[in-house]
Amino acid sequence: MASLFGFGGAADIDIQFEKHDPKTKEIRPVISVTNESSKTTTDVPIFRGNSDDVRGTVKVTSPSALEHIGIKIELFGRIELKFGSTTHHEFTNLVRELAPPSTLNGTKTYKFEFNNVDKLYESYKGSHGYLRYFVRVTITRSYAGSFHKEKDFWVQRVTQAPEINPSIKMEVGIEECLHIEFEYNRSKYHLNDIILGKIYFLLVKIKIKHMELAIIRRESTTSASNSQTESITIKPTYEIMDGCPVRGEAIPIRLFLSQYKLSPTYKNVFNMFNVRYFLNLVLVDMEDRRYFKQQEIILWRDEIG
Image (tube, rainbow, N blue to C red; front, side):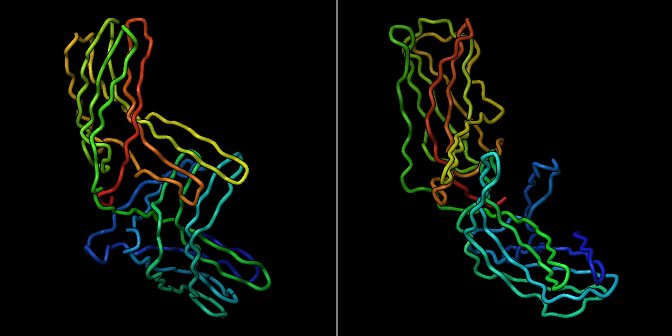
């Protein structure tokens, strides 16, 4: 609820999105989003890309007479980038009038509906980039300024499986010390997929303590005057092997992506940010020296929620 105080009384604004998916008739799924400043977590409803209309109600309550010159609701799609301070770029901005100039006293409920909204991109919240969708209700007053309340919603887009999805095969090693060949069954995966593969040891002349596989998310953000890249290892890591292998040994890989909170791969969203994912194969020897090899994979979404 948002309380608006000023001349002519006070008002509370409550925004509610449509709770049931009109296509499936089921309760709309939600996702937990953390507010970085307050450290509070809120459940935000999920809408499908271009197929879902954004509907709901706005309830405005005023215990005394509140004069205004109009009430409106706007829908925004915005990219927010953090470079010390926050800059933003709006790629969607739609408006609907809820009420003409009048005096509000008591409680009034308004329905809103945004049809055929062009939700081109998935919502995303990372370390420096935030692709955000939200609605804003504004009560405009001529004598005491305007007041508003915002509420976020989340967008997810289901895409079709790629027609071409080759396997990954690579050979890596240290000259005359270590030579391995690794193979992953595909190079593109949906977010609930399973990565299957094998590690072949062709030459082993160093004492390996263990081997692990990790997923790295690399987020790159760019504005007119700034750019930055951050790589984050997503926990937990997957231990492939404990102990030293012998020449000719083959170690299987079976990594379930559903245990991680991943987004699809983003490439050049408004030329402002990218999100890429890499499989990071790490070997640790008895002296705790680390050897690693990264391979990019493409992620896509096969279902909502």
